[in-house]
Image (cartoon, rainbow over all chains, first blue to last red; front, side, top):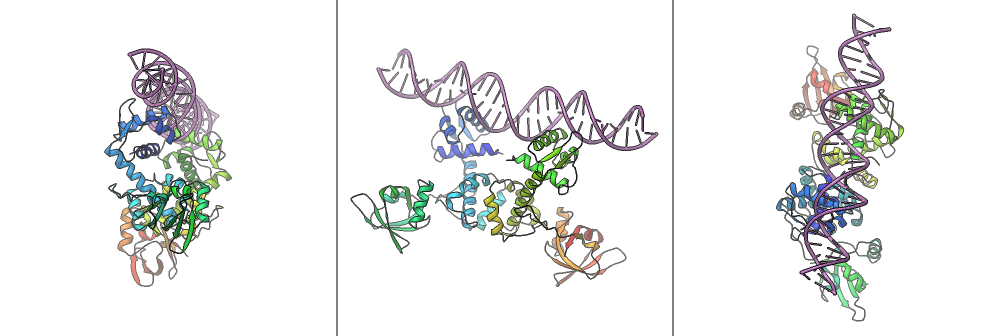
Length: 218
Length: 218
DNA sequence: TTCGATTTTTAGACAAGTCTAAAAATCGAA
DNA sequence: TTCGATTTTTAGACTTGTCTAAAAATCGAA
């Protein structure tokens, strides 16, 4: 059984390893968790001892199959709770992360199964990220920036790269939201901006910079 | 800001003090929390230092107004989450306590306000206990054992004294559930058992012992 | 390939929360 | 009211998770 702190480290390391593929450096973990390298060394020893990571001094860590399973369980819980907060409690998708960071540590497999059922077995969270199932399986729809969508093509706005308050305000102002159906009507050669139709009923212009921040999925 | 452990102590001490009325002994706290008296002494010093308790060596502790406020916030969260688990996620009311023990420590006043609204501002939790509002106010309906309800009177089954699996099984078997409307039709002099009508459509006999375990409210 | 910069680990300290064992205070019965 | 039993506190140790400072290992550029 992992502690609150151990779960946070494991989840972070898993994310940094890009799904358990790459080894992760001590400093990268320290930076991500706003902690110190010495603390990270202590913790990765603990997690390695528990079989979650494989670790060789000075060589960084790799997530073990056991660790991957643990990380995906935490991620599953996080994303289910985010879905609950947005769909049921009517939070805005940009304000749920901190609360889900707490909720993801609640220990009760039955609770998560019932929550999943209550939400109708969602496949994606409010940020467009996939929700792993009980076995850790999930399907990632390829996401690409709106700026790379070919003229005439359409897709769903599933995520944003930058979720700063300034950019969220921009989204609101232009009637853009996660889940919106976007159709690229025209590309302006001069400045790279796009003419985009939202849900077939509204047309806006999106700057090149904004289009690079909007992530689209089919 | 109180830690997880501090919150648990405060809540337990508040309950033992019967709403902040009585002073509470070190040993009583230790027994309730399955910990040792020495640990309790350490913790009550911390909580007294934070202004939650007033404490004089060897004299037990009293809950301060600040402490009462904190305890009622935790109790409010606990009971709202229990209500959510039973009404929305379809847990049985007897299996939600442990999960709510974890959920009650989630820190987000906005979350609790939204949860309260989502649930329709419930006044009582699935065990029949009152849910304090944001200011810590609540109204306790007087509860009394079914065995003391006069012949011909009726009320709602709001709680049980003993929630052992054996007694829960008994409830199920007899069609009894929290929220059932009960009407005392007859009292058997011989063994103190009662003839009770459930929701006007079913009549059962309840032994004296069972009737002492069933708590009724008008 | 060597030496300085960077990264990582070790060593030692600290805070929270727990424990055991022993000392101190209080309680209660004769 | 006194003395033994009980309760409570203190003292010291342990674990988890954190830190700083310093040592050790690795990396990279000349």
